[in-house]
Image (tube, rainbow, N blue to C red; front, side, top):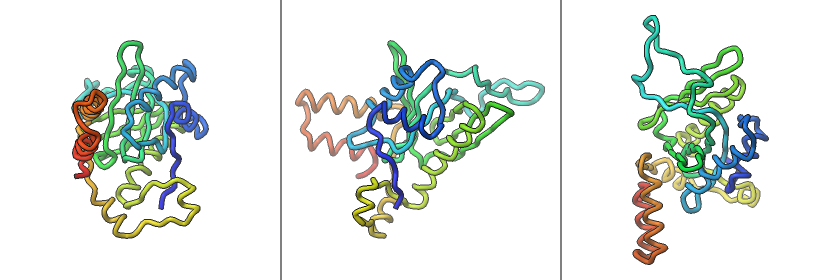
Length: 230
């Protein structure tokens, strides 16, 4: 059984990243907490964060980048889209987000869709390339932080492959165990998120629930089907 933190608020996510030396925002904690607030507001019902980190973000395509002298142009630390908040959740998602005054960006990747995690470091700076079935991006920071970030993602992916489950320390201390059948069911669970529209679909369904257009049971049924649990 894998014991993980349960982080619910932007302050908790920010503090976890700082306490574990997983990056920081040179413009201040107040701004980085706004990035984490976007993450917190995007979480599903009963979803919480088990680890978090901070870095500068760049999206890319597999065939993206001009070639210089026959080689692909290297991404630059300061030539990025700015600071982002990144988290791994108990729903086996890697969520990343950025706050802007009039436009917030939030995306997610199922951990079992990640096909490559490649830390690339230089004398001072570095970045970790994350390649998945949907999105490809790099997270930039100092080389020591980049290695820690890569390890966080790799551990999340490894937990899924090994059929591990998340648990809080209180449950563990009480000696609660998970049967092998339960582990097998979890390993077989296939999450089929539409990473581009999943959040929008769930938000629309939640709004319909609040306006009385659908029942609570209908909302739960829709959510379970969207997450591939049914």
